[in-house]
Image (cartoon, rainbow, N blue to C red; front, side, top):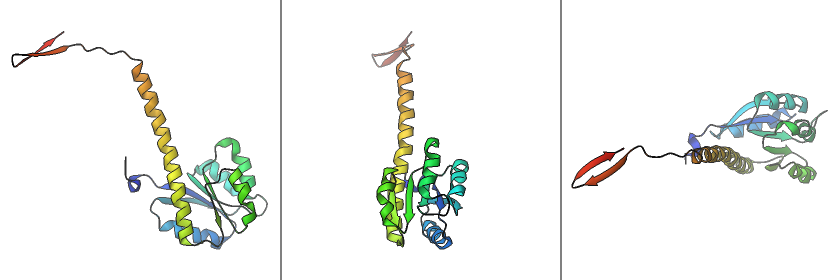
Length: 168
């Protein structure tokens, strides 16, 4: 298996209407070479468009935003295949609903570097496990395909008296 540092960075889209929150996340993510911020959105409408075009590996999503909130973003993208989500919010009462959407984590503002790092480690493990699973499925399919092909040797090797003979 390859070293985690040799793998491509996890592409992260940050969605939060608060500029200071986005700046804090950018700063914390910059400390982790396994993370790459591929975009920032200030509202839910931008987030829907960005997820469709950027196709991030991970979505850091604020729950409460003007007009289109975090849950509305997920509802809008439900049929398109959502990336894993970590909710970021100042409100703890949305946690149960967040996990109904299979959130990887729920960061309650204000969070510190240790809490952010723990959430990112959990996300990285999950994302890499899922991407590794896709590779496993391709390998299994290839093996099944090869199993269906009967192959016979064209020659038989016989060793006798210190000599090797090839028989057709």
